[in-house]
Length: 127
Image (tube, rainbow, N blue to C red; front, side, top):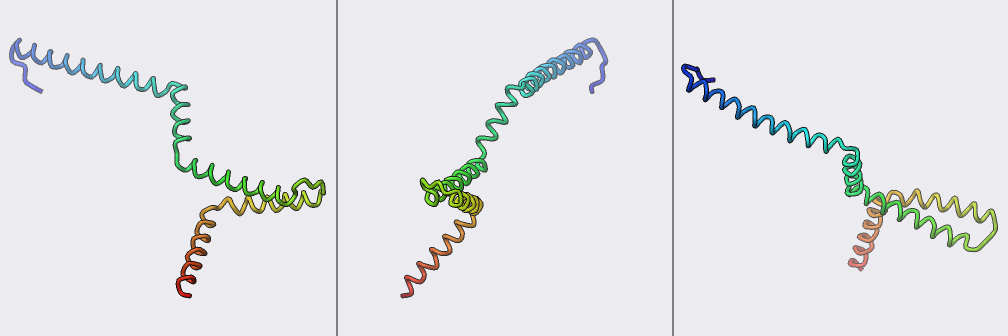
């Protein structure tokens, strides 16, 4: 802070403080508008919606779920077909549930498949 000795330095100090006041008021207004926009319920919903559907984790989960359900339904149709036998239907439902639970963990399936493929290729090279 500068020492005020005369009217000229007082006027300069007042002008400097008014400039600071104006710039801080503008920053405060900008921050207020930003806060109002970010707290708008529609904007909050849009932001969460975009976060949810743009996450790579969701895409992996959707693929895994579709794969497991598709495999289960295919198995169910192969076992039951057009049969009306209730025992066959119960067995098919049990097998379908088991296949869905097995295919939920696609990472382990990939690892086992890759290791099986590598072992097979190594055996083919040796012989």
